[in-house]
Image (tube, rainbow, N blue to C red; front, top):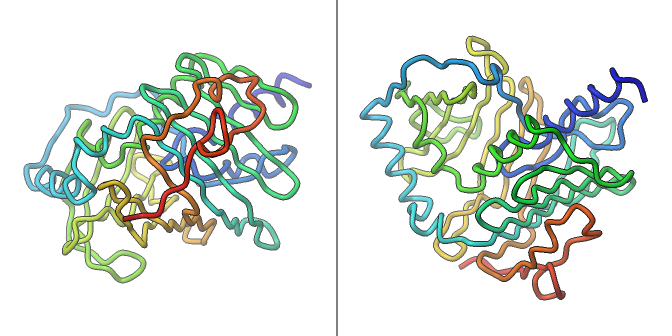
Length: 290
């Protein structure tokens, strides 16, 4: 394999590891790779200086209300393990492609994600120190930069707490793509740029819009819907992803469970397959929302 091909593959892998809920793989992998595409983002200016941090008092108040609406910081961080299985429909192919995406997480920072389509599968693991990816050819350890990006992406599981860091500004009142009335915030941190849309009457996070450049238009938009409470924490059971205003994927929660024991062996790069907690070692149990 040429160095250019290897670099391109690594870039595509890194792109698949960073954004909220780890929904699928990056568009860059559609050609010449066994991986499938997805909705994840890279920093637009990795390691860049965002300037002095600005925390708008009105935006802070909306963030505080949003965190409380989602269950509160105590309940969100009390989840020592997380298991979620999704059904994903990907519209980037000539015909929609349907598969599953399963996430296991164990604090402080052990993570496994399996994404499976009918003819392809990818496993991403963070073993607490290093990131690994296996797209059917055996586990490959990623370098320190890629591993740090994976670790950064794990913070998304505790959304919206990650917005307590960085600059946060109030923008305006606006309707989201589904016509819901929201208050719009701007967030910048360590090279990431996002607009957030928070529902006015429920304080739920409805939209995360991501930028490819600091001054550019939103290129990736995640739209959340069908929130349900699971062990006191709100979980969006449906998420639509739009890229350049085109619907890219839809994910729907199939199973979810918090604080069930997950065997640490599941986060070893040689672990062959994950299971639900009620199916033996390294597994996770499905729960009905309540």
